[in-house]
Length: 170
Image: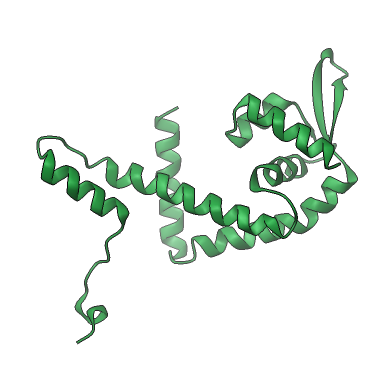
């Protein structure tokens, strides 16, 4: 008889880790690991898939994210570095380095902020527009594929629960 016919729930790396905790430290409630561990593991898995997806366009996901965010911001496709940082969940140093790389590749340009001569505005170039034209659909396809194992209702529920965790932990 095949194991798939037995209604056995498969285990993952988080099940293994929490079982170890429960065996060795049964007095500690480690139930939070069942969620946080899976979110961390999925983060690694998803970022790896996204980087692989972007290699065919010659960029990593983090640079794609800047280009796509600028494109999605609407005309005139400009944002301050701090606006980008707050949208992308990247450190200010990380955004600065990505902007340097994006500028060197010709996808973005940094301009003096006309409202504040000391500030900087990041603008999408025509090469950045072209990159976004081909990468945004590819990224959307991958993201749908990554959650395709869930029904539309499950995806909606999970998105809602994750949103609540983000809001509750700001």
